[in-house]
Image (cartoon, rainbow, N blue to C red; front, side):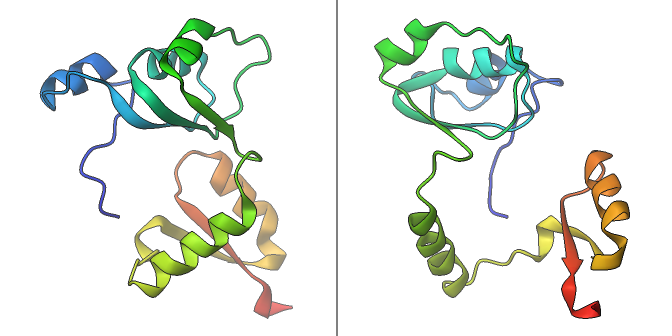
Length: 137
């Protein structure tokens, strides 16, 4: 999809990745996708001043963070429902019109009647995007 580097914090640390990339300042954009509290804290620690963090995973209810990382770095945190819906649509339309191909992230197709199998596939952690085909109704 064009990303040059992604980091799975279960396999390597953000500090290791920063050294490998010769980064001094931290990350400008961070995506917390899995709801892992320790990974979220690491992400905040390694963010650059003025950076933006999308919180897309659902962390445990008792997740604590160091608010000093957010306040003194001037970080912007947005949850999945904190995005601007129309702005997201316009940006996605622009990306698609300029040739972005989504096929690489779509790993499974199911008829809508097989929705339970689709959700099981998503829950297995062994899929990318799962498409439910409504034309089979």
